[in-house]
Image 1: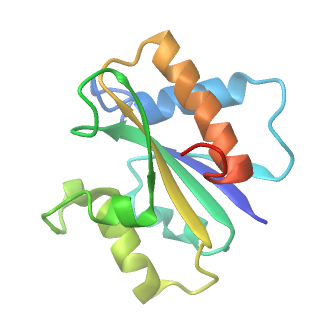
Image 2 (image 1 turned 180 degrees about the vertical axis):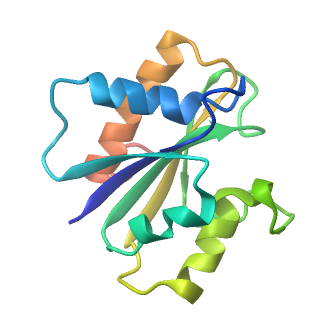
Length: 148
């Protein structure tokens, strides 16, 4: 199965750098499990669509708000991601729910079999980023088996 980890966010905005801090941590690892591609998605928005047209499993990593009342990590499946925003807008802030809503309408390749989001909420402490990195690898390797 094709597996992609797509880390998104903005390094220069406090509170939005979580995905890219996980990207840096993944890049620093001596080795990832075979067959996992890691993408620095940054602020690419709809430009991420080609990475989603190869089937398989896709794991996004990004900062989130409103899922927990403490600093930590949450895992959302595709349906939870798409229903996480009650406003569907088309500007820069449209976000991942919009990208996933548009995907089936514009996909030129194979739709992903599974899509997940490892969301980092609150402060990006070393401990939280390590937890997010570990969970990202687990979800990329096994999906949600044994995690929920």
